Image (cartoon, rainbow, N blue to C red; front, side):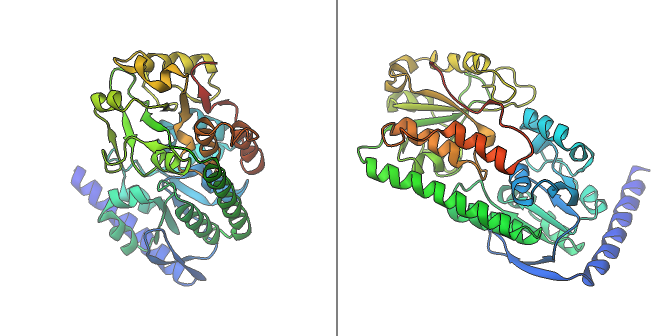
Length: 371
């Protein structure tokens, strides 16, 4: 009985997709090149978008009505990973809560049947989702749904700019996308210039994802995500050469490396009561209370960074975004305080939200353990 039902659903979904593909054949199209080098033909001004990730960036690029043209999302990648952020956006735009949920790639719950039934004009997904979906990409394209790949995770100016301009072109928001891309490039270049002028030997930096709590070492990052931030900020990332992209470092190696600055990435993950709590509507005392046990790990009391008080928490949702230059400023200011004396990263972050997003940046997003 179940097999018949599933077969029927697939046939229905494929029928809808064929009808949708026929309708799209009569629609004006444009050609874009995505961040993995694929040339893809998509409808001009797509009206039915499946959005896999980069939810805030899409909002910033598209403006206040951006989600009017979104029909499906990978909901757990937003609600489950950034819960307080999700709640803020749902209050600002209740329609988000009604979007079709296609499942989450990392957990293996992505449903091609649900994706087909939602009848998108185009699917915009992250590079890591593209890699994770494998042959499913071909099935989506065979059903008449073009797939384009954005990549803010690479944490490079090139990929950020390319992703922004591509999305802007797809949703008829090119002027706004160009403005965002230009501001991003200029902000990163300012940091690079200041770091270069500051000179000096790079400080040893350790970054860890604080989603597991202090009893277990979380992922550190090589040259991607937070690792890319450390590199641009002029720090010596102790994870380089020890992990390929991200993975936990050996605790003995971390202790032996004696980092001079420590950054723990926190968020508002659901069902993780020992994780470093950060995000919207979080208070500093609670974040610091979750961060404190990390410096009580064996050997950490001898770190130069712990002795000098350079232990910090960064909002994990802030990496791989169009406003991540605020976090770049923060890390760079920790490493080169005199060169960034006139820079206020928290104000940079607040102003981006005020300018481009429908919610306010109220909560804890970057913080030092010791006041």
